[in-house]
Each structure stands twice: as C-alpha cells, then as structure tokens.
Image (cartoon, rainbow, N blue to C red; front, side):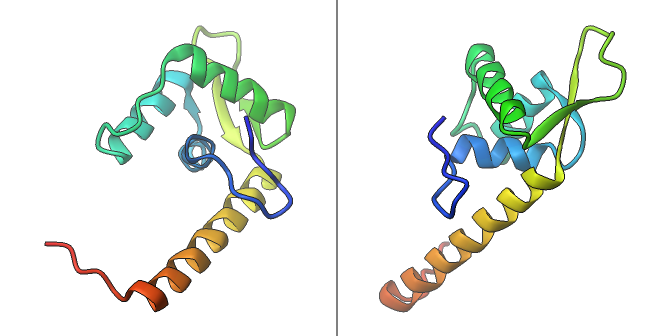
Length: 109
C-alpha cells in the first residue's frame, strides 16, 4: 500500500478500512462496511482486503482483538491508527476548504 504516514495522503481504501475498525469487525464485515458507505463504488475482493489488513497490522495501525480462535478474526483500530485517520481527516478538510474557496460551494440536487 502506498500510504504516507508523514503527512501524505492515505489511499481511499486504507482510510475506509481504518474508519470501519473504530468498531471491531471481521474481514467480511469490513468489506460490507466499505461497499455500503461508498454505495457500491468500492468493492474489495478478499485477497485485496486481507493483504491490506496484514499491511495495516505490520504498521501497527490495526490489531486483532477478542478471541482469535474462532473462524472469524476481528480487528480493531489502534491509537496510532486513530492518529493516522485523524490526520487524514484534517488533510481532507483542508483540501475541501481550499477547493471551496477556488471553485465555490457546490450545491447538489
């Protein structure tokens, strides 16, 4: 994954995974969350999702939680992951603020 924790942009998928794990979820529930929140625009395959989950675990942004002996391993966002998500939200808000100044407020019907 090409995520830059030093102030650069997260990928959209990474940001959605982090958001989804503010409440512990197993992989399939993460896929459902992302598909639901994006109205189907983003749909992850199992290989993509589990590769991303492993990468985020390696970065210490998420961790397994609860009883991992069952068939469905649940994951939870860590404090470091929350800091990364909050920085991304601030970056996106700044982007929207600057764009709104230039383009103006866009009204959608």
